[in-house]
Length: 418
Image (cartoon, rainbow, N blue to C red):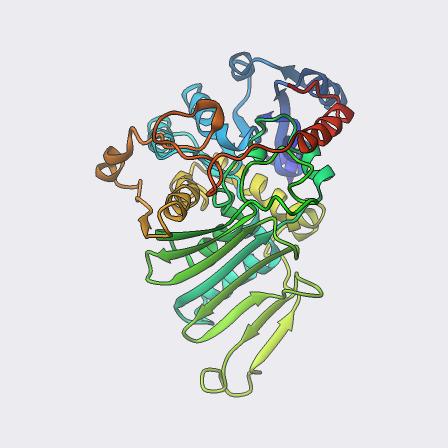
């Protein structure tokens, strides 16, 4: 199969998370890794030699390399500028979450994709678990009727040592990004399954807890613990999202339709799917409840070997297919930007007593025009009047003891701290 496919030459930015993409861009998908880019030169050179590809610390020189597509796994708040530059250089782009860090960036990204004619794919992996792909199939068949209410959860607690090891440097994005911003793992499966777009949000934040020694007391964090977001979809459905570092690790997606319920199990084997249809809705001989392990709709053996429940494989798979067909992937720039804006607007909401904020639809040019200069953001390194602090509590200064512990972990990783 792979030998008959035209090779797609790929470059990857970011050698941390990017390793999953770099090692996944292989012959099974007709993708050939040709270049890597990162500012951490020591780590970059090790991986470049291991994979026998070109290595660049300069992004402009990287873009000049002979390749067809760029996969962005750089810092969370830097994706849009890198994507725009790659599109302008004539490259297809697959970008990690978030697609944009401000509404102005969202406008610029959408228009760069439209102008370029190139494929842009939002690299959100959670829709592609076996359960979520099965729920999409069943929803499209009408099994549970129309989407009324859904819940998405991505709860990922970490101890201080692990958190510090992946948040290297005082101003690493994980140490300051607001709790609402990392919402796409919870939201994307709901959008994917029910083919719905977010329209309005109300954001709620669980604040920074200085008494939590394990999660906060030995880190350089000055953001909050978690967030809950209520989203009103363009279909009229309501969704609740929960994300952050609360205790009780779990990834869960639930869809209530007007004819039934679908969800992955919350305990035990979480890759099992539960379907419930009430006695007055189900057909003759159909059980009220079924629990089973769904299979991937295609490429199951290859997907099972990849990370994030097969999601890492399917992102590469659909990106490659979009490039070859010329048709936008489902997770296109409009959906990617919309998901990212949910996190931004939910933080605005949380800072305004959880009042309702709209999620502008950037498929419409007239709507974009209202937000071209909206660069409201919580980045402490580019703070200016009118911009928020990363916590709902305001400016937070970690203790000297906490920063000293973090710097010790960073040193172990080979980083010379500030």
